[in-house]
Length: 234
Image 1: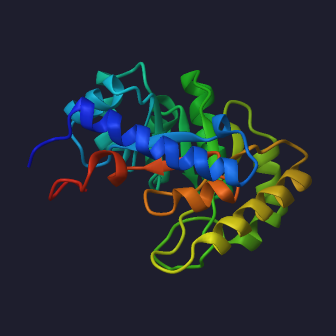
Image 2: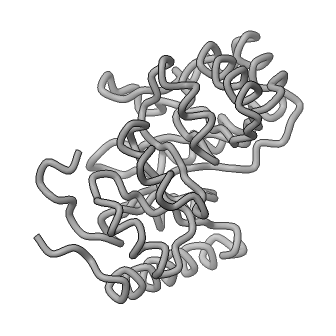
């Protein structure tokens, strides 16, 4: 299949940006407070370069091993890990990524914090919350965010900065309740931990505008920028 060109990606990114800006305006928000992470999972390095040349500066990957050659080839970009992170990949993730969206346990957060300390890196972290309760999704049970161990892990990190929460809405149906709930959970955790958690990573190509209306600061966009991933691309 043909790979998307720089001009195609730039035009699509402009269209996505207009949609997000309009959503922010409807919500009375500053559009500058919404950032796009371009999801390059399954795409070759050539597409990552094209995304950079189209003006996209934050790229997201689902798997550490797939991402590492891309990070090495394009170290000037801000790389985001948005997929499930196994604890045995924590050291590599802490060294490679500027943002890790998928922290799903206090133990993983502590392990990442120790790995970042050893690597001399300072990634930002988001706690992934399984707001919809789907068995196929990773993330904290929403009730677990009240646990003292979780609150302490969020508050006491040395090298990782916990900056907010992330979720994935259920496919089909209205995603708005999931996004609204994540915002409420973030507000509650801020109070318990006594720290600011300004970031909400929620919304993808099909529901990003609704996510922005509900407070998203980071949206994860793949298909709307690059088209359908190539077969076998993950």
